[in-house]
Image 1 (cartoon, one colour):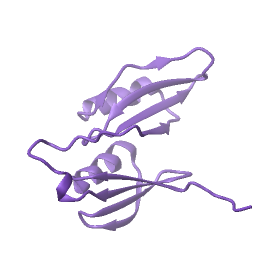
Image 2 (cartoon, rainbow, N blue to C red):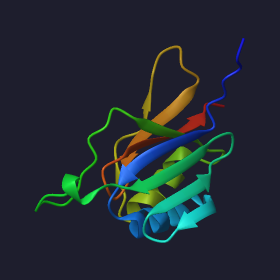
Image 3 (cartoon, one colour):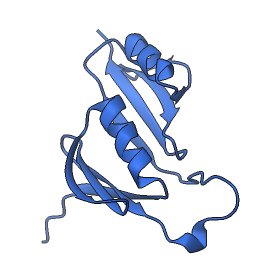
Image 4 (spheres, helix red, strand yellow):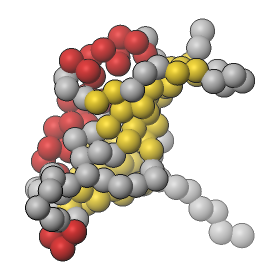
Length: 125
């Protein structure tokens, strides 16, 4: 039997430079590959997150906004409320902190500069 391992997620976007700044400045992700303004790969722990420049045929006269059913989830080891406040101070769109019965984490969703949804989560103490 073939063993499969998911080790990289690729998202498409237009503002590759802006995505680089967003993920490095807000999440301190380590950049491991880059083709300027075309391609980025970040080490995000057990998986890599890559951004690939999308073709011009997908661009219209409105600012690009991702329409995806994908959510990047980042586990954090600091207070979620403090981290959320820092992201908001940096201009990041953030939702409210939530908790769900039977789930041992606090959750909070946000959006990057192109509308890709991400979640930060902190294990409850």
